[in-house]
Image 1: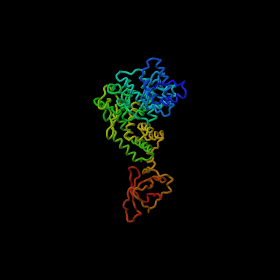
Image 2: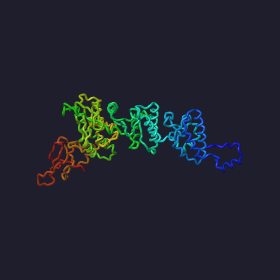
Image 3: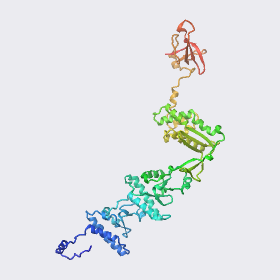
Image 4: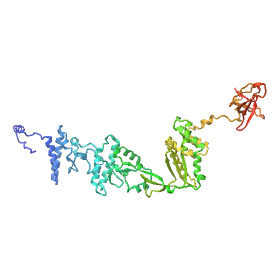
Length: 518
Protein backbone atom coordinates (compact mmCIF):
# COMPACT_ATOMS: atom_id res chain seq x y z
CA UNK A 1 0.00 0.00 0.00
CA UNK A 2 1.61 3.32 -1.08
CA UNK A 3 2.00 6.08 1.52
CA UNK A 4 1.14 9.62 0.44
CA UNK A 5 3.46 12.49 1.54
CA UNK A 6 0.95 14.52 3.54
CA UNK A 7 3.27 16.36 5.94
CA UNK A 8 3.13 19.64 3.93
CA UNK A 9 -0.50 19.37 2.77
CA UNK A 10 -3.21 21.61 4.25
CA UNK A 11 -6.25 20.31 6.08
CA UNK A 12 -8.29 21.04 2.94
CA UNK A 13 -6.30 18.51 0.93
CA UNK A 14 -6.52 15.99 3.77
CA UNK A 15 -10.28 16.17 3.64
CA UNK A 16 -10.36 15.77 -0.13
CA UNK A 17 -8.02 12.78 0.01
CA UNK A 18 -10.24 11.05 2.55
CA UNK A 19 -13.28 11.75 0.37
CA UNK A 20 -11.40 10.26 -2.56
CA UNK A 21 -10.85 7.00 -0.61
CA UNK A 22 -7.49 7.47 1.07
CA UNK A 23 -7.10 6.07 4.61
CA UNK A 24 -5.94 8.30 7.46
CA UNK A 25 -4.70 5.13 9.28
CA UNK A 26 -3.85 1.86 7.56
CA UNK A 27 -6.50 -0.87 7.95
CA UNK A 28 -5.51 -3.79 10.20
CA UNK A 29 -6.01 -6.27 7.38
CA UNK A 30 -3.63 -4.36 5.17
CA UNK A 31 -0.93 -4.21 7.87
CA UNK A 32 -1.37 -7.90 8.57
CA UNK A 33 -1.15 -8.69 4.86
CA UNK A 34 2.01 -6.60 4.64
CA UNK A 35 3.56 -8.72 7.41
CA UNK A 36 2.59 -11.88 5.57
CA UNK A 37 4.18 -10.57 2.41
CA UNK A 38 7.40 -9.60 4.16
CA UNK A 39 7.76 -12.91 5.97
CA UNK A 40 7.94 -14.62 2.58
CA UNK A 41 11.03 -12.60 1.71
CA UNK A 42 14.37 -14.24 2.48
CA UNK A 43 16.10 -10.99 3.57
CA UNK A 44 19.55 -12.36 2.71
CA UNK A 45 21.63 -9.46 4.06
CA UNK A 46 21.90 -7.41 7.22
CA UNK A 47 20.30 -4.26 5.75
CA UNK A 48 17.22 -6.18 4.64
CA UNK A 49 16.92 -7.88 8.01
CA UNK A 50 17.24 -4.55 9.86
CA UNK A 51 14.54 -3.02 7.63
CA UNK A 52 12.28 -6.02 8.29
CA UNK A 53 12.95 -5.63 12.03
CA UNK A 54 11.88 -1.97 11.94
CA UNK A 55 8.70 -2.68 9.97
CA UNK A 56 7.74 -5.58 12.25
CA UNK A 57 8.31 -3.59 15.46
CA UNK A 58 6.12 -0.74 14.19
CA UNK A 59 3.49 -3.20 12.97
CA UNK A 60 3.45 -5.00 16.34
CA UNK A 61 2.87 -1.69 18.13
CA UNK A 62 0.23 -0.50 15.68
CA UNK A 63 -1.81 -3.72 15.61
CA UNK A 64 -1.64 -3.98 19.42
CA UNK A 65 -3.17 -0.48 19.68
CA UNK A 66 -6.19 -1.52 17.61
CA UNK A 67 -8.67 -3.11 20.00
CA UNK A 68 -10.67 -4.74 17.20
CA UNK A 69 -7.66 -6.62 15.83
CA UNK A 70 -8.15 -10.34 16.57
CA UNK A 71 -4.91 -11.70 15.11
CA UNK A 72 -6.48 -14.88 13.71
CA UNK A 73 -5.12 -14.26 10.21
CA UNK A 74 -1.53 -14.30 11.55
CA UNK A 75 -1.75 -17.38 13.77
CA UNK A 76 -0.37 -19.75 11.14
CA UNK A 77 2.20 -17.28 9.77
CA UNK A 78 5.90 -16.91 10.74
CA UNK A 79 5.61 -13.33 12.01
CA UNK A 80 7.35 -13.66 15.42
CA UNK A 81 10.90 -12.31 15.50
CA UNK A 82 13.42 -14.40 17.48
CA UNK A 83 17.19 -14.97 17.58
CA UNK A 84 18.00 -11.26 17.97
CA UNK A 85 15.34 -10.38 15.36
CA UNK A 86 17.05 -12.40 12.63
CA UNK A 87 14.65 -15.38 12.45
CA UNK A 88 10.85 -15.59 12.03
CA UNK A 89 8.73 -18.36 13.56
CA UNK A 90 5.04 -19.10 13.97
CA UNK A 91 3.16 -18.26 17.16
CA UNK A 92 3.05 -21.96 18.13
CA UNK A 93 6.88 -21.98 18.27
CA UNK A 94 7.15 -19.16 20.81
CA UNK A 95 6.03 -18.45 24.38
CA UNK A 96 6.29 -15.47 26.67
CA UNK A 97 7.88 -17.36 29.60
CA UNK A 98 10.16 -20.40 29.34
CA UNK A 99 12.67 -21.85 31.81
CA UNK A 100 15.93 -23.14 30.32
CA UNK A 101 14.88 -21.38 27.11
CA UNK A 102 18.34 -21.58 25.55
CA UNK A 103 18.13 -25.40 25.50
CA UNK A 104 14.89 -25.40 23.46
CA UNK A 105 16.21 -23.59 20.38
CA UNK A 106 15.46 -24.01 17.46
CA UNK A 107 12.24 -25.89 18.29
CA UNK A 108 10.71 -23.48 20.81
CA UNK A 109 11.61 -19.87 21.64
CA UNK A 110 11.04 -17.42 24.43
CA UNK A 111 9.86 -13.94 23.37
CA UNK A 112 12.83 -11.64 23.96
CA UNK A 113 12.68 -9.04 26.72
CA UNK A 114 12.78 -6.18 24.18
CA UNK A 115 9.52 -7.49 22.71
CA UNK A 116 7.78 -7.77 26.07
CA UNK A 117 5.91 -4.52 25.44
CA UNK A 118 4.13 -6.28 22.55
CA UNK A 119 2.90 -9.14 24.78
CA UNK A 120 -0.76 -8.35 24.11
CA UNK A 121 -0.24 -8.52 20.35
CA UNK A 122 1.54 -11.85 20.63
CA UNK A 123 -1.26 -13.30 22.75
CA UNK A 124 -3.80 -12.26 20.11
CA UNK A 125 -1.99 -14.15 17.37
CA UNK A 126 -1.74 -17.31 19.52
CA UNK A 127 1.50 -17.06 21.52
CA UNK A 128 0.98 -18.85 24.86
CA UNK A 129 2.21 -17.36 28.11
CA UNK A 130 3.85 -20.70 29.04
CA UNK A 131 4.37 -23.88 26.98
CA UNK A 132 1.47 -26.31 26.84
CA UNK A 133 1.49 -30.09 26.78
CA UNK A 134 0.57 -29.92 23.12
CA UNK A 135 3.61 -27.75 22.34
CA UNK A 136 6.00 -30.10 24.13
CA UNK A 137 4.52 -33.06 22.24
CA UNK A 138 4.89 -31.18 18.94
CA UNK A 139 8.50 -30.36 19.83
CA UNK A 140 9.31 -34.01 20.52
CA UNK A 141 7.65 -35.05 17.28
CA UNK A 142 9.69 -32.46 15.34
CA UNK A 143 12.94 -33.83 16.80
CA UNK A 144 11.81 -37.36 15.89
CA UNK A 145 11.05 -36.30 12.29
CA UNK A 146 14.40 -34.50 11.98
CA UNK A 147 16.36 -37.53 13.21
CA UNK A 148 14.23 -40.40 11.87
CA UNK A 149 16.71 -41.42 9.18
CA UNK A 150 19.79 -40.94 11.35
CA UNK A 151 21.48 -43.35 13.73
CA UNK A 152 21.88 -40.77 16.49
CA UNK A 153 20.66 -37.34 17.58
CA UNK A 154 23.00 -34.38 17.62
CA UNK A 155 24.10 -32.98 20.96
CA UNK A 156 21.69 -30.02 20.87
CA UNK A 157 18.73 -32.27 20.09
CA UNK A 158 19.65 -34.44 23.06
CA UNK A 159 19.66 -31.42 25.36
CA UNK A 160 16.33 -30.27 23.95
CA UNK A 161 14.39 -33.53 24.24
CA UNK A 162 15.62 -34.14 27.80
CA UNK A 163 14.40 -30.71 28.91
CA UNK A 164 11.17 -31.15 26.98
CA UNK A 165 10.48 -34.50 28.71
CA UNK A 166 11.21 -32.93 32.10
CA UNK A 167 8.84 -29.99 31.50
CA UNK A 168 6.20 -32.24 29.94
CA UNK A 169 5.91 -34.57 32.94
CA UNK A 170 6.08 -31.74 35.44
CA UNK A 171 3.19 -30.11 33.61
CA UNK A 172 1.22 -33.38 33.45
CA UNK A 173 1.73 -33.83 37.18
CA UNK A 174 0.60 -30.32 38.17
CA UNK A 175 -2.04 -29.77 35.48
CA UNK A 176 -3.53 -33.14 34.53
CA UNK A 177 -6.55 -31.40 33.01
CA UNK A 178 -4.29 -30.33 30.12
CA UNK A 179 -3.64 -33.93 29.04
CA UNK A 180 -5.05 -33.94 25.52
CA UNK A 181 -2.78 -35.49 22.92
CA UNK A 182 -3.73 -34.48 19.40
CA UNK A 183 -0.95 -36.63 17.89
CA UNK A 184 1.38 -39.44 18.86
CA UNK A 185 3.64 -38.90 21.85
CA UNK A 186 7.36 -39.51 21.32
CA UNK A 187 9.67 -40.36 24.22
CA UNK A 188 13.38 -41.26 24.44
CA UNK A 189 14.54 -44.85 24.56
CA UNK A 190 17.63 -46.26 26.23
CA UNK A 191 19.47 -46.06 22.89
CA UNK A 192 19.17 -42.24 22.96
CA UNK A 193 16.65 -41.95 20.12
CA UNK A 194 12.99 -40.97 20.15
CA UNK A 195 10.24 -43.55 19.55
CA UNK A 196 6.48 -43.61 19.78
CA UNK A 197 5.67 -43.95 23.47
CA UNK A 198 3.51 -47.04 22.91
CA UNK A 199 6.51 -48.84 21.39
CA UNK A 200 8.55 -48.38 24.57
CA UNK A 201 8.74 -50.45 27.78
CA UNK A 202 9.29 -49.13 31.28
CA UNK A 203 11.39 -51.40 33.50
CA UNK A 204 9.26 -51.80 36.63
CA UNK A 205 10.55 -55.31 37.38
CA UNK A 206 12.50 -56.44 40.45
CA UNK A 207 15.11 -58.30 38.42
CA UNK A 208 18.71 -57.14 38.35
CA UNK A 209 19.13 -54.56 35.62
CA UNK A 210 22.11 -56.24 33.96
CA UNK A 211 20.50 -59.68 34.06
CA UNK A 212 17.31 -58.53 32.33
CA UNK A 213 18.14 -55.53 30.15
CA UNK A 214 21.19 -57.09 28.51
CA UNK A 215 19.06 -60.02 27.36
CA UNK A 216 16.20 -57.99 25.86
CA UNK A 217 17.97 -54.99 24.34
CA UNK A 218 17.73 -56.53 20.86
CA UNK A 219 14.12 -57.63 21.32
CA UNK A 220 12.36 -54.45 22.46
CA UNK A 221 13.03 -50.79 23.24
CA UNK A 222 13.26 -49.69 26.86
CA UNK A 223 12.29 -46.21 27.95
CA UNK A 224 15.29 -44.08 28.85
CA UNK A 225 15.89 -43.79 32.59
CA UNK A 226 14.00 -40.58 33.39
CA UNK A 227 16.78 -39.60 35.78
CA UNK A 228 18.64 -38.51 32.61
CA UNK A 229 15.76 -36.12 31.90
CA UNK A 230 16.22 -34.22 35.19
CA UNK A 231 13.28 -36.01 36.86
CA UNK A 232 15.15 -37.36 39.89
CA UNK A 233 16.23 -40.87 40.86
CA UNK A 234 12.93 -42.13 42.32
CA UNK A 235 11.80 -44.93 39.99
CA UNK A 236 8.45 -45.16 41.79
CA UNK A 237 7.81 -41.49 41.06
CA UNK A 238 8.74 -42.15 37.42
CA UNK A 239 6.15 -44.93 37.26
CA UNK A 240 3.48 -42.70 38.81
CA UNK A 241 4.14 -40.03 36.18
CA UNK A 242 3.87 -42.56 33.36
CA UNK A 243 0.57 -43.83 34.73
CA UNK A 244 -0.80 -40.27 34.44
CA UNK A 245 -0.54 -40.58 30.66
CA UNK A 246 -3.64 -41.69 28.74
CA UNK A 247 -3.61 -45.46 28.35
CA UNK A 248 -3.29 -45.24 24.56
CA UNK A 249 -0.11 -43.14 24.94
CA UNK A 250 1.50 -45.01 27.82
CA UNK A 251 4.65 -47.16 27.59
CA UNK A 252 4.08 -50.82 28.47
CA UNK A 253 5.16 -51.98 31.93
CA UNK A 254 7.92 -54.56 31.44
CA UNK A 255 6.53 -56.65 34.30
CA UNK A 256 3.48 -57.36 32.12
CA UNK A 257 5.55 -59.29 29.58
CA UNK A 258 8.39 -60.79 31.67
CA UNK A 259 8.46 -63.45 34.36
CA UNK A 260 10.81 -65.74 36.28
CA UNK A 261 10.49 -69.48 36.45
CA UNK A 262 12.43 -72.52 37.56
CA UNK A 263 14.89 -74.09 35.16
CA UNK A 264 13.05 -77.39 35.15
CA UNK A 265 16.01 -79.50 34.13
CA UNK A 266 18.16 -78.14 36.96
CA UNK A 267 15.80 -78.91 39.88
CA UNK A 268 17.37 -81.69 41.91
CA UNK A 269 15.59 -82.71 45.11
CA UNK A 270 17.45 -82.86 48.41
CA UNK A 271 19.28 -86.15 48.99
CA UNK A 272 17.99 -86.34 52.60
CA UNK A 273 14.34 -86.30 51.41
CA UNK A 274 12.01 -86.53 54.44
CA UNK A 275 14.92 -86.59 56.90
CA UNK A 276 16.28 -83.19 55.86
CA UNK A 277 17.07 -81.12 58.95
CA UNK A 278 17.05 -77.85 57.01
CA UNK A 279 13.58 -78.39 55.54
CA UNK A 280 12.35 -79.95 58.77
CA UNK A 281 13.22 -76.85 60.81
CA UNK A 282 10.83 -74.70 58.77
CA UNK A 283 8.13 -77.39 58.73
CA UNK A 284 8.27 -77.73 62.54
CA UNK A 285 8.19 -74.01 63.22
CA UNK A 286 5.39 -73.28 60.77
CA UNK A 287 3.23 -76.01 62.34
CA UNK A 288 4.13 -75.27 65.97
CA UNK A 289 1.62 -74.12 68.57
CA UNK A 290 3.95 -71.26 69.54
CA UNK A 291 3.99 -69.78 66.03
CA UNK A 292 0.23 -70.28 65.63
CA UNK A 293 -0.43 -68.38 68.88
CA UNK A 294 1.82 -65.52 67.79
CA UNK A 295 0.35 -65.26 64.29
CA UNK A 296 -3.26 -65.29 65.51
CA UNK A 297 -2.38 -62.47 67.91
CA UNK A 298 -0.98 -60.47 64.97
CA UNK A 299 -4.12 -61.02 62.91
CA UNK A 300 -6.45 -60.09 65.76
CA UNK A 301 -4.41 -56.96 66.57
CA UNK A 302 -4.35 -55.92 62.91
CA UNK A 303 -8.15 -56.29 62.68
CA UNK A 304 -8.65 -54.29 65.90
CA UNK A 305 -10.62 -57.24 67.30
CA UNK A 306 -13.05 -57.61 64.38
CA UNK A 307 -11.60 -61.09 63.71
CA UNK A 308 -12.21 -63.54 66.55
CA UNK A 309 -9.55 -65.85 67.92
CA UNK A 310 -11.35 -68.89 66.48
CA UNK A 311 -11.58 -67.29 63.02
CA UNK A 312 -7.92 -66.26 63.14
CA UNK A 313 -6.86 -69.82 64.01
CA UNK A 314 -9.03 -71.23 61.23
CA UNK A 315 -7.55 -68.75 58.76
CA UNK A 316 -3.98 -69.71 59.71
CA UNK A 317 -4.65 -73.43 59.53
CA UNK A 318 -6.25 -72.98 56.11
CA UNK A 319 -3.19 -71.06 54.86
CA UNK A 320 -0.63 -73.58 56.12
CA UNK A 321 -2.61 -76.29 54.42
CA UNK A 322 -1.93 -74.48 51.11
CA UNK A 323 1.81 -74.09 51.67
CA UNK A 324 4.22 -76.81 50.61
CA UNK A 325 8.00 -76.72 51.19
CA UNK A 326 10.39 -78.58 48.89
CA UNK A 327 14.12 -78.78 49.58
CA UNK A 328 16.49 -78.99 46.58
CA UNK A 329 20.18 -79.65 46.08
CA UNK A 330 20.27 -77.33 43.04
CA UNK A 331 17.87 -74.44 42.49
CA UNK A 332 18.10 -72.15 39.44
CA UNK A 333 15.70 -69.77 37.72
CA UNK A 334 15.60 -68.09 34.30
CA UNK A 335 13.71 -65.12 32.88
CA UNK A 336 11.04 -65.27 30.21
CA UNK A 337 9.76 -62.72 27.69
CA UNK A 338 6.13 -63.70 27.21
CA UNK A 339 6.53 -67.50 26.86
CA UNK A 340 10.08 -67.52 25.51
CA UNK A 341 13.13 -68.05 27.76
CA UNK A 342 15.77 -65.31 27.62
CA UNK A 343 19.30 -66.50 27.01
CA UNK A 344 22.00 -65.89 29.62
CA UNK A 345 19.51 -65.15 32.41
CA UNK A 346 19.96 -68.38 34.43
CA UNK A 347 20.71 -67.56 38.06
CA UNK A 348 21.14 -69.60 41.22
CA UNK A 349 18.71 -68.73 44.01
CA UNK A 350 18.17 -69.67 47.64
CA UNK A 351 14.37 -69.45 47.53
CA UNK A 352 11.79 -69.71 44.76
CA UNK A 353 8.02 -69.48 45.15
CA UNK A 354 5.72 -71.18 42.66
CA UNK A 355 2.23 -69.75 43.00
CA UNK A 356 -0.64 -72.07 42.21
CA UNK A 357 -4.41 -71.76 42.09
CA UNK A 358 -4.98 -73.15 45.57
CA UNK A 359 -1.74 -72.17 47.31
CA UNK A 360 1.98 -72.10 46.66
CA UNK A 361 5.09 -74.26 46.78
CA UNK A 362 8.23 -72.88 48.39
CA UNK A 363 11.44 -74.31 46.92
CA UNK A 364 14.51 -74.04 49.16
CA UNK A 365 18.11 -74.64 48.22
CA UNK A 366 19.47 -77.08 50.78
CA UNK A 367 22.03 -75.77 53.25
CA UNK A 368 23.95 -77.88 55.78
CA UNK A 369 24.98 -74.69 57.51
CA UNK A 370 21.89 -72.92 58.85
CA UNK A 371 23.65 -69.56 59.02
CA UNK A 372 21.93 -66.26 59.73
CA UNK A 373 22.08 -65.01 56.13
CA UNK A 374 20.41 -68.12 54.72
CA UNK A 375 17.77 -68.29 57.44
CA UNK A 376 16.98 -64.59 57.08
CA UNK A 377 16.47 -64.90 53.31
CA UNK A 378 14.09 -67.84 53.70
CA UNK A 379 12.16 -66.21 56.56
CA UNK A 380 11.71 -62.98 54.57
CA UNK A 381 10.27 -64.86 51.59
CA UNK A 382 8.07 -66.97 53.86
CA UNK A 383 6.77 -63.79 55.45
CA UNK A 384 5.87 -62.29 52.09
CA UNK A 385 4.19 -65.41 50.73
CA UNK A 386 2.23 -66.29 53.87
CA UNK A 387 0.93 -62.72 54.04
CA UNK A 388 -0.06 -63.05 50.38
CA UNK A 389 -1.99 -66.23 51.20
CA UNK A 390 -3.59 -64.29 54.08
CA UNK A 391 -4.73 -61.78 51.40
CA UNK A 392 -2.20 -59.24 52.70
CA UNK A 393 -3.95 -59.06 56.06
CA UNK A 394 -0.79 -57.89 57.86
CA UNK A 395 0.47 -54.34 57.43
CA UNK A 396 4.22 -53.64 56.87
CA UNK A 397 4.81 -52.84 60.55
CA UNK A 398 3.46 -56.23 61.62
CA UNK A 399 5.49 -58.08 59.00
CA UNK A 400 8.62 -57.15 60.95
CA UNK A 401 7.38 -59.08 63.97
CA UNK A 402 6.19 -62.00 61.82
CA UNK A 403 9.75 -63.06 61.00
CA UNK A 404 10.81 -62.97 64.63
CA UNK A 405 7.80 -65.06 65.69
CA UNK A 406 8.80 -67.74 63.20
CA UNK A 407 12.17 -68.01 64.94
CA UNK A 408 10.63 -68.46 68.42
CA UNK A 409 10.94 -71.90 70.04
CA UNK A 410 8.78 -71.38 73.15
CA UNK A 411 5.59 -69.60 74.17
CA UNK A 412 7.63 -67.37 76.46
CA UNK A 413 9.72 -66.19 73.49
CA UNK A 414 6.49 -65.48 71.58
CA UNK A 415 5.13 -63.42 74.49
CA UNK A 416 8.32 -61.37 74.69
CA UNK A 417 8.31 -60.76 70.92
CA UNK A 418 4.69 -59.60 70.97
CA UNK A 419 5.41 -57.28 73.90
CA UNK A 420 8.45 -55.87 72.09
CA UNK A 421 6.33 -54.93 69.07
CA UNK A 422 3.45 -53.66 71.28
CA UNK A 423 1.02 -56.37 70.21
CA UNK A 424 -1.44 -57.82 72.68
CA UNK A 425 -1.17 -61.56 73.33
CA UNK A 426 -4.66 -62.72 72.43
CA UNK A 427 -3.79 -66.36 73.13
CA UNK A 428 -3.19 -65.59 76.84
CA UNK A 429 -6.88 -64.85 77.38
CA UNK A 430 -7.69 -68.52 77.06
CA UNK A 431 -5.03 -69.41 79.64
CA UNK A 432 -6.55 -67.16 82.29
CA UNK A 433 -9.91 -68.99 81.93
CA UNK A 434 -8.40 -72.47 82.32
CA UNK A 435 -10.10 -74.55 85.05
CA UNK A 436 -7.97 -76.01 87.85
CA UNK A 437 -6.71 -79.54 87.25
CA UNK A 438 -8.22 -82.32 89.42
CA UNK A 439 -5.93 -82.93 92.38
CA UNK A 440 -4.71 -79.32 92.61
CA UNK A 441 -4.94 -77.41 95.88
CA UNK A 442 -7.98 -75.27 96.65
CA UNK A 443 -6.81 -71.77 97.71
CA UNK A 444 -7.19 -71.13 101.43
CA UNK A 445 -9.46 -68.15 100.78
CA UNK A 446 -12.15 -70.58 99.55
CA UNK A 447 -12.00 -72.95 102.54
CA UNK A 448 -14.82 -71.13 104.32
CA UNK A 449 -17.10 -71.76 101.32
CA UNK A 450 -16.70 -75.55 101.53
CA UNK A 451 -19.47 -77.51 103.26
CA UNK A 452 -19.70 -81.21 104.03
CA UNK A 453 -23.30 -82.47 104.46
CA UNK A 454 -24.68 -85.94 103.88
CA UNK A 455 -27.75 -84.45 102.15
CA UNK A 456 -25.69 -82.54 99.52
CA UNK A 457 -26.53 -83.47 95.93
CA UNK A 458 -23.71 -83.49 93.34
CA UNK A 459 -24.02 -83.29 89.56
CA UNK A 460 -21.76 -84.73 86.90
CA UNK A 461 -18.91 -82.31 86.00
CA UNK A 462 -19.23 -80.37 89.24
CA UNK A 463 -16.02 -79.29 91.00
CA UNK A 464 -15.93 -80.37 94.64
CA UNK A 465 -13.40 -80.49 97.48
CA UNK A 466 -11.94 -83.53 99.15
CA UNK A 467 -9.24 -84.38 101.66
CA UNK A 468 -6.55 -86.96 101.26
CA UNK A 469 -6.37 -89.65 103.93
CA UNK A 470 -2.99 -88.53 105.20
CA UNK A 471 -3.81 -84.84 105.41
CA UNK A 472 -6.39 -83.03 107.52
CA UNK A 473 -5.74 -79.38 106.73
CA UNK A 474 -5.52 -79.20 102.90
CA UNK A 475 -8.45 -79.41 100.49
CA UNK A 476 -8.04 -80.56 96.87
CA UNK A 477 -10.13 -80.14 93.73
CA UNK A 478 -12.01 -83.15 92.37
CA UNK A 479 -14.54 -83.50 89.54
CA UNK A 480 -17.71 -85.57 89.86
CA UNK A 481 -17.69 -88.18 87.10
CA UNK A 482 -20.70 -90.36 87.93
CA UNK A 483 -23.51 -90.78 90.48
CA UNK A 484 -23.40 -94.47 91.59
CA UNK A 485 -26.30 -96.62 92.86
CA UNK A 486 -26.81 -96.66 96.63
CA UNK A 487 -25.43 -99.65 98.46
CA UNK A 488 -28.35 -100.13 100.95
CA UNK A 489 -31.93 -99.20 101.68
CA UNK A 490 -30.92 -96.17 103.70
CA UNK A 491 -31.55 -94.01 100.56
CA UNK A 492 -29.79 -90.82 99.66
CA UNK A 493 -27.81 -90.75 102.91
CA UNK A 494 -25.60 -93.46 101.52
CA UNK A 495 -25.11 -91.98 98.00
CA UNK A 496 -21.82 -92.81 96.38
CA UNK A 497 -19.98 -90.98 93.60
CA UNK A 498 -17.13 -91.65 91.23
CA UNK A 499 -14.74 -88.68 91.17
CA UNK A 500 -11.54 -87.74 89.31
CA UNK A 501 -8.73 -86.71 91.67
CA UNK A 502 -5.83 -86.40 89.18
CA UNK A 503 -5.20 -86.63 85.44
CA UNK A 504 -5.52 -90.43 85.33
CA UNK A 505 -6.84 -91.38 88.77
CA UNK A 506 -10.50 -92.04 89.63
CA UNK A 507 -11.95 -93.18 92.99
CA UNK A 508 -15.34 -94.01 94.48
CA UNK A 509 -16.40 -92.05 97.60
CA UNK A 510 -19.41 -91.46 99.83
CA UNK A 511 -21.26 -88.17 99.81
CA UNK A 512 -19.92 -87.44 103.29
CA UNK A 513 -16.36 -87.55 101.91
CA UNK A 514 -17.02 -84.55 99.65
CA UNK A 515 -17.21 -80.81 100.25
CA UNK A 516 -19.55 -78.63 98.19
CA UNK A 517 -18.94 -74.97 97.31
CA UNK A 518 -21.69 -72.85 98.89
